[in-house]
Image (cartoon, rainbow, N blue to C red; front, top):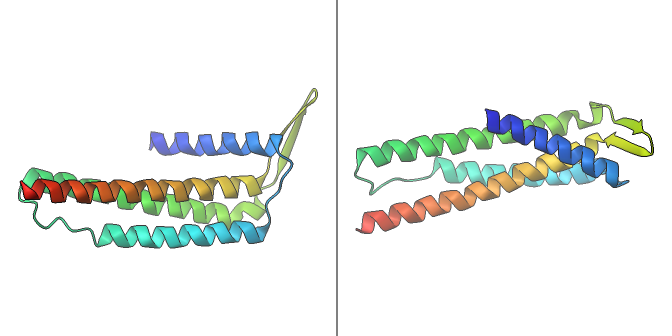
Length: 145
């Protein structure tokens, strides 16, 4: 839970940084497109997780560990997709804020929040694809011994 909260604060900090430095606001169409990509990546990832097979693994301790890791990855996939969905659905209702401190303007732009959070989720899904493939390869290698 601590890691998730830290990641959310990181995303908010990056949102403020980019929103303050770059004078760009993303269109609803662009945000919708990356959200759709996120949904596709999520669906593929969840399909991989659900169909993950531990056939050939004989040691009970390994089976328990693998199942626990798969459950953790599945839960994280769902958690990040739900959060991305929440941000996508409500980004247009999150008020943009700007604070002027001397000559520096600090901006919070909800379109940046949506884009960064959805992209962060996609990167998280991809990283877990790679981890799942590595686990599958490791299981295969160990069952050959």
